[in-house]
Amino acid sequence: MGTVPVEDGMTTATETSPPKVWTVEDLLAMPDDGVERWIINGKLREKPPEFKGVTVTVRNRHHSRIMSYVVTAITVWLRTQPPPRGEPYCGEVGILLPGRTTAVGVDAAFAPANVVAVQDDEKTTLLDGVPTLVVEILSPNDTHEMIHEKVRAFARAGVPLVWVIDPDDRTVKVYRPGAEPELFNLTQRLPAHPAMPGFAPGVAELFE
Image 1 (cartoon, rainbow, N blue to C red):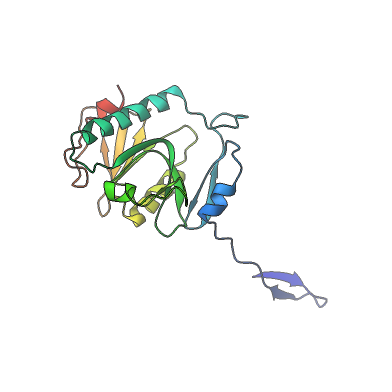
Image 2 (cartoon, rainbow, N blue to C red):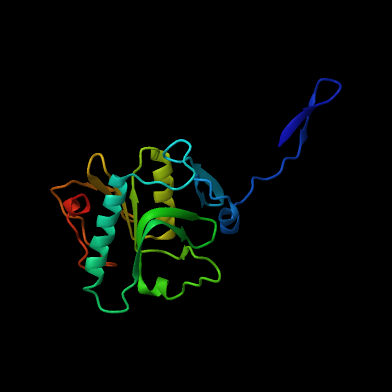
């Protein structure tokens, strides 16, 4: 509620519009102007381009190299699994979580076969459903709150495994529902998860 002055110096309440609830349709209708946008619980979030004046998505070569190693590790593991195998994704893949009020782009993800089977390109080219693994690679213009808001959204949606990779420290922070986050360094191996049996790459494999 807002207030407006009246002649005797008192104020009276005025009605204000409720905040807009953003949908995936609103998000997809936004211009492709280099600003990274996503919605979490119906709220619009924006991050400006990493490089001033650049109006397309640009990743530095270090970021891209790590992304390629992550997807390679997933693909090598995936080819050892019996079909149906699911699919890996990378390159700022968009994920639409259940409820359709949260849609975010991530650096890499793995979706299980049952999620892949129900995708409908006539509705959206976003990955519609809950992936097994989500991977975020930190960029210089990421903030702590940006990343953790996404992590909380993934936890609420029941994503089993989230990795946040820090290229500067060369570490991986692992988030799992109901557990405290764990930090792993180059000398360690990432823990396997029942949803991806046998997938436990060494941290060093993601950097070199």
